[in-house]
Length: 314
Image 1 (spheres, rainbow, N blue to C red):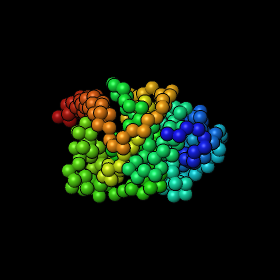
Image 2: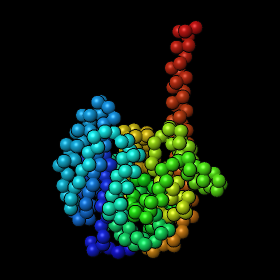
Image 3: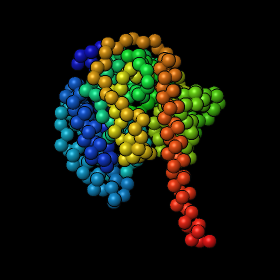
Image 4: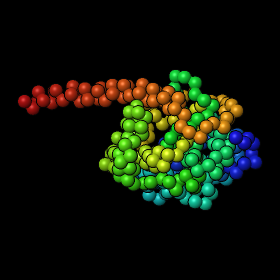
């Protein structure tokens, strides 16, 4: 991978809503990146869902108007609420159609100072390789060492980058994606060999139980047999797993220590790294029991609270 600042730096798209503290952490970390001052930042501020969110959205926008430290800062204030999925889909489409490539962050992703360097170098390296659909900055905290860089099939959503050619493969229709996964008998593999219920997430999106753009992005890339490049150590920390985000509960299992080095990126085989996939599968299985415990605790609480009501009504 090329190092230095003579590369074609990708614009950064940051999607925000009503979380001022999280947004500040995200922007401050991004501003501390080695390539920030040479990068164009495009901020998309979604409108309030209701009058109850108006003040928080206004607070975020007042802060955003003070952001400096980048080559340019362009802020788009949505007059109405798009929702996260539409906001990201529309924003990414707008930027890649004019700039050809993009780095994407949400308002709860704190980055290593080397994040932009890794993303831009990787975008440059694989710009003309159709098999590679995206670059990702976060990697799960597995128990063993991962390669310096590696590929996985599909796409991801916690600090990522792509090109216009990659984003053109995005299929917004979840029904089409699920039908194709089932037709090709790929649902088990899509679920990391049943380690995590990605297929159920897609089915829930179709039913309207979630509005995830990310599961559709992952499925789109997966069905086209495209690869995403990951760093061996995470360059992104998600601070939104505190219950404050959309479709987000409090989770600590995904916490990582940000890498303070990229190392010497190696030109790796253009194929899914099965060893890395196995390690991540083990990790995903390890976090599922805690999820089941939380579900059991929730329903146990409902049962306990219901007993007095039943006695009262009998």
